[in-house]
Image 1 (cartoon, rainbow, N blue to C red):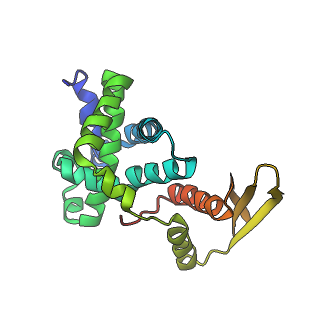
Image 2: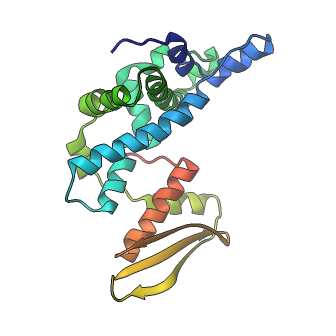
Image 3: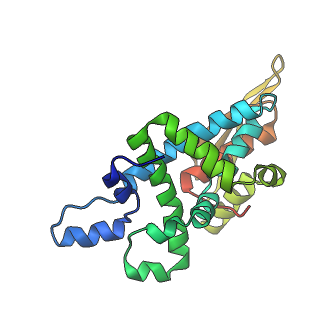
Length: 221
């Protein structure tokens, strides 16, 4: 797959720290933050489609958890490292010595690369890249399926660290006909998310999964 619009890929591998330094010299220069935003949305959609077709008999909870295991911040940073993307990123020299920052920057660049491929070659090509390169070559799906991840544990750890008060409410009675629970998560009195599921525990987990994504909380697989 040959790139056509080279400038987009250069943008995908340009960290905002370089853009800031160029801007001070009044040189027009782009960074990869907009492409990262686009790539994040495209990655979510394609991974969801892949999982939907690969696991036709699994429920929504399983599909949501598997998607999160694939697209979470730690996983993307690890994939970027395996692919050697960090070696191509333009960033301030002092950042290169910060291993934590470089890890995060790598994951962001991977999302930006996905956005660049989409703009350059379209949906079918970026879908091929994610299926056959990202997931097919660098991800161990069997290992991911055996890994247990608790978004609720991660989110509650964040809440405790930041002295946030969490509240769970079942906003409607259990529907005896469909056997579902509607659960809402509030943080310091502010409603964040509501989920409906046959299991109250699963509904709470789904709320926390969204909260972790909102806060960009990472967890080790």
